[in-house]
Length: 212
Image (tube, rainbow, N blue to C red; front, side):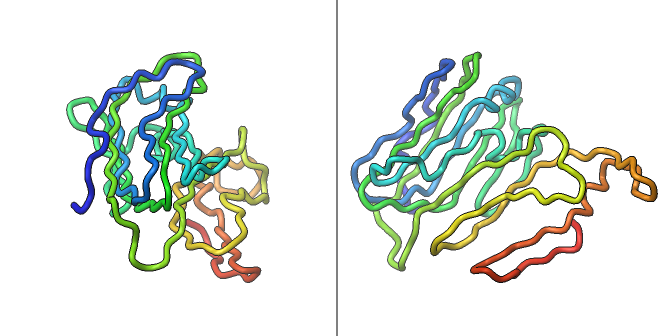
């Protein structure tokens, strides 16, 4: 596959209120695979586990997301398979895999931070290519945003707001609908799918959806 498994299905016990290092490397390369597996009965514990990836000894992680939300598990386990990400369930074990390449110039640290009050157990696999991309490249970033409770009527939920040069990869959105009690509005939770997405790039509206 062009990469080496530098961490291969290693079990980790994540104790509450601690950060566990999965990989620390001080040479250049490209992350090609991040894979985690967990018992289906323990998926709920991933809500409090944050995946943190820091490149080149930066002060802050470029990837800092709850592990369950990163793979779309917050509303329940739903297997899917795409080129960059996959979730599958086999024999009551859930496997989460990300194949998005993430190059780094001088080193990388991958950590799991358990912010919860209960332990979490999982296995981790990391694949690294010792080479950097031949073309110009940037760092892979991932962030998390959420709204507490119901989204206010006629308001927009901001999924991303960043500045600087880069390439947008995508958004994994989880949403739960509520019946709209206003007169003349659809009385069904799926009315949330009528939300119109808007994308503003370099100051211009480049994406204007008309419902999901």
